[in-house]
Image 1 (cartoon, rainbow, N blue to C red):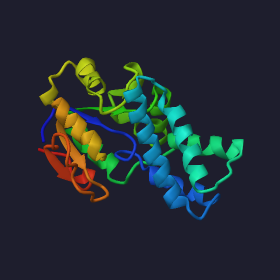
Image 2 (cartoon, rainbow, N blue to C red):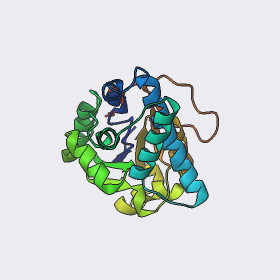
Image 3 (spheres, rainbow, N blue to C red):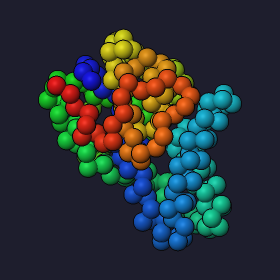
Image 4 (spheres, one colour):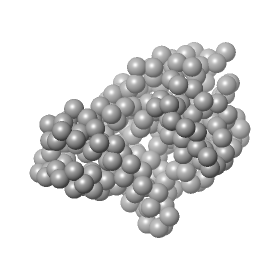
Length: 219
């Protein structure tokens, strides 16, 4: 994989939302299941938002998803706990393989960007808190097109920002549905299958599948 530009998904690809589990364990022994459901509903609500033509930003969808997951597991959240958990999405740590991979890509002369469902302030905070802000030339948010991945206008943001053709842009995501959407759009896609999940059976296939970002840098 050799590209002038590598565009990365953020949540689950560069930063680890599983790190939310210890905070949730303070509220319920079902923390693992609650976090999984929280993430699932967060994504489902983003899909619903796009299909309904009713854009609500990702911070608000994250709050709605938390309320749903808490209700499912009978967790009563006071205002302080709710705000603390929502804010924790802007404090997620990077995976151990992220910084070395970004450094190698930079050494190869590639430009790097993030393309995420997150709002611009949330992206800036999250990338800075993870200590990754020095690596990126742009943080691209769906907020500018008022629609969520995998809508094609979202992926087009990278084309507009950098003036490259679709096939010249390397796209990296840990989300199979995101990888499929980006491949449909025409990016050169790498699916980082961190959780060893089956490949998506609908949509275009990514050009390659890797287990960690350590496999990403090319000559």
